[in-house]
Length: 277
Ligand code: NAP
Image (cartoon, rainbow, N blue to C red; front, side, top):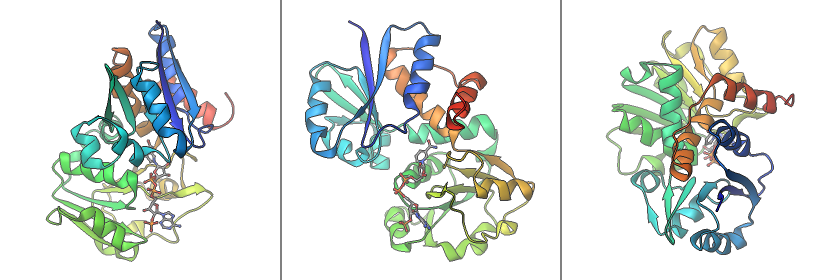
């Protein structure tokens, strides 16, 4: 039987995951499918039962199902538990294993694009939503000693820091200058940068001259934050790499082959994002 995988979300039309996984299926000559399926929240449980019954090998989970999938899976890997969200489901017999590969994606992308980035021990993270949870967990895994976490709503940052206050220091966005001074890594995990938005006068000059600036937003690829960082001569890493790298362990889990993030794949997705594919 041909293996099937999916990405579920609501809405789902914007997802680039089918493009990525179909490219790899084709590249490796694997007879399988990857489908984007719109599943509204009230139909999530019924859909996951279809997966348990063997219709799919597994799939990706995106907005708004990442937390609901955490509760609905039969088993969780350590990362999903740590991050508090599931973005990948793997069927094992009649049970569902919930995983989170955003953390792998974040680390894998930086390893590829800014080798040595994790020799720093202090980082500044903007935002305290779902993506920030994966980023903070990844930085903690790589041994960062001080992770500054600043957010428009400081109480959300404090909630995310709870239980690891010895390495995660929460505060408001207004603390940027003070926290930036010794941070060799700046990560934007907020939605700012999408839909023509940008930070108002973020004082990037407070960062060390050898800091790396990462944006998780990938539409547009060159966000106002990355453009400003480049103008200052800082090393920048865009969000598309994370999207590509988080797909690697998922594909391997469903189809048994570890695929590679290549320039050709990246170009394909960039062309699609630019509407020229
Ligand atoms: P989320 O849980 O909704 O969190 C959104 C964050 O953005 C919160 O910290 C929120 O602050 C902040 N924010 C929103 N509007 C703001 C504004 N006007 N001013 C200041 N802060 C604002 O979203 P998420 O799932 O973490 O995703 C965040 C971004 O990361 C999205 O753009 C998503 O596409 C991207 N992402 C990319 C990848 C990738 O593979 N590249 C993976 C995951 C996510 P409050 O707490 O104050 O509301």
